[in-house]
Length: 525
Image 1 (tube, rainbow, N blue to C red):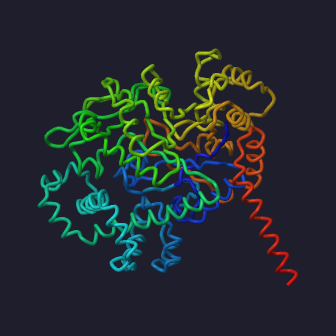
Image 2 (image 1 turned 30 degrees about the vertical axis):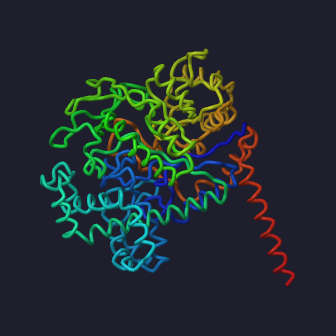
Image 3 (image 1 turned 90 degrees about the vertical axis):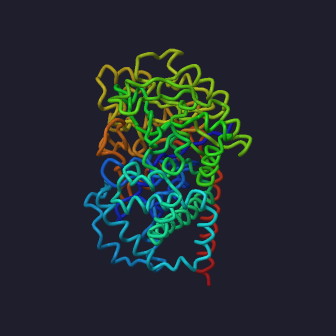
């Protein structure tokens, strides 16, 4: 069995002088770092177009299941195209803290630059743009209209729009598509540039034998083009407002449960249409990524239904999901694909059976293994109980960093964990390496380590604290933080535990020898 490993890092967390990580040189440099570190995977968070500033920037609450985030469009690339100048980009205030995303300033400044680029781009005569718009019209037309109308109404949720356009009536669509023609075209332009730049970056990674692990949320946001344009797919009332919403009961992440507020699917409708929307969504995801991590996989076995208007998730109950029928249909339509099943949270025999029947590797999180002092056969998150068909993580985007988590534990629990690690001597400041080593050497076929855990960063660098708003999704790397020295350490560990990406390393060595030969020939000449 071939073993492999990778790094979890949100695109937003890449360093950039323009306020947020994007598809610029820093992304290509990170791919190079992964290559020389012997990694196989770059796992990212969802690439969807997120809300406008403040607490609405969760990648799990996007305006579309298909659209990409305009924040990820490289301004540097637009400068190279000649539709922006470096001076124009440098003049925008993106925030003073290079280690944090300031979403309010980002929203205020970046879209103005993107609109300037659009105005200077002659896309009406660009055959590539025309081809993109035509091939993606099945989702792009509704999405671009949705975003343009949303802007027209001051960013209000579509549920507060006038009835004619809120209900997606044909004559209203015709009216707004005429009145907002150029605003709609601007939205299409953003998706064109996003797709163009992402494909180039992914192609670069794949050429270096690095695979992209993408992440798709099980649910879509209520304030999304999907729900607005296709209310028949969701549990809505006659006014197209939710009758029930998604969430989860108390678990490892939240003692009070989580009230997400996403509309729930009408699985009877999905079944009647042969799950075509879901199959299309998965097909689209595999166009973007090499491997797809499906968030909240347990929701396909049973989903947690909370009455609309409920004060908390505690008022919810479980309903039966589509189960293997959906994934059988997916495999019939798309063939065997690489999927990671995020099965964290409350486990039941039904969820375990669904994961087993699907054949997809599931997730193991080291931190969960030490939630209790059970070191026997019943604690499925302790490494000695892993099988091979799983993906081990030191932590996820929803966890504390491993250094922050360990530092916050009582001394008795720290001692218990050190006993399991058989490591009583390593200083706390270096103990993150012991956890990464434990994950690397376990039996799981794949090991994914968040960048923060390779760096040994504390909880001030945590990506998300579930159940909280206002301070999440902001952490960023500083330039040079993923250093050559760290790369050498990670490579040594990757080789030690049989997880090295030899295709990448051999290609890198071959390229280095070729470059050295060319340099020697030039010197002789």
